[in-house]
Image (cartoon, rainbow over all chains, first blue to last red; front, side):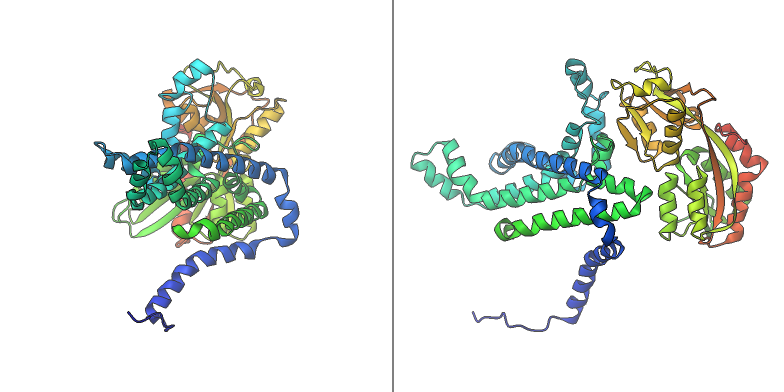
Length: 265
Length: 232
């Protein structure tokens, strides 16, 4: 076949529609930059409200990502490799948080794991542990919303993996655990990393499930998105400063990891 | 889409404080009966959030705020037409889940770390007033959450996730059996002053004025008092 990748003018309609699509992302960002009080920025982003919220956001999003890796990767493996009745239904359930409004997720968590919840009440009576209004509640709510990104990415990678490598390793005497650890995981490594990055990014921006399940208290459960929401009604300059901080942190992480892991998506 | 007021071809958007939800829904019905051509659309939220929507250019016809400071901010921005009018008063009450599992009996309990306690966020009138009442009572509150508006706070109390919160008297009355009220003594209690104004963004100033007249009329005031608001 001849090389058809000659630089040619793209069709005008595609160019136009693509530009509209891009504008949808760029215009709000430009609006944010336009409103940024640049001279006050250093004072604003170092205020205790912002640093507290940043700390909680980092702890919660990293914990949610680690927890997702711990249980999400095995879940993806089961979904990709084990035939069982109702697998399609289970897959649908796992992906539900992707399409569910986060507030609904938060309310569902409250009904199940709140102090008066179906599971939460016995938990509280046995151990005195209350999940809502605590950092554990924030981690749980963000994990609920973000983990599907990891499961869907890893499961896709496992399904596309040529199983002959695993068979070959097994025929050479490797046990099931060794195959998983030495062959499967290294081969899907880039996908796992990409899934983890997406999961972290979604956790970092989580709002609806968090405020519904974990409430909003500065220094305990108030993450950056919650702080923006509160500040919008009291001090808009702070809200703009936090928004900018979130854009910068998220972009830095996504760009830094792009070169290594991102392209598999 | 036809609204609840029949084939209304004219729409009046009313942004009202979340605490007015019950009373204004009834006033809407009365108004649409009197003006069948108008379809009133109610937008409830924390007064501060509504203020931001209006300042951001939302095409709102009437603004009913639970305090004067949010109304003043809108007026200062030149968004109101004519003087805002005070139309109702409300006071605060401690709200606890039915049965009062936390055995709360007064504002003093708000300093108890062992209880799960909620307030409205400080920017929202119910949060600002609650903090004023707590400071009048000399109580440093050990709050567990600052909810975005009074409805969100009530939902968590109703679910039993919070042991107590400070809401309006009218909210406790409207919640029926799911929430119990504990009175706050007059010496420390504070009064919320509700004000209403026509906005510059009103599609039809006359209709907007007519809605305000309905709120201030005997019929409107009777509905408000039914929901526990007082007229002074």
